[in-house]
Image: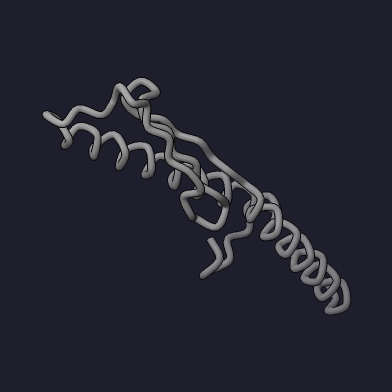
Length: 102
């Protein structure tokens, strides 16, 4: 493979990565816990954008269960964003793993 062709491929991959990274910022992933009693939404930049708690989930006698449901929903939302991001970056690189990126 000649150097010019390799450079062109690298530039194309770099453009695809930049596009993928912009698209990832717009991703959201919603997760629920406790049968839908707690819902968390995470954005592509790994931030929680909202948490919704059904009033029926609030029990002053069992705060620990509510805390567990919130943690579970948040962790699942972040895991979902991470997986979607990895898939998008993998598609942009043609499956080539780039250290420090994925």
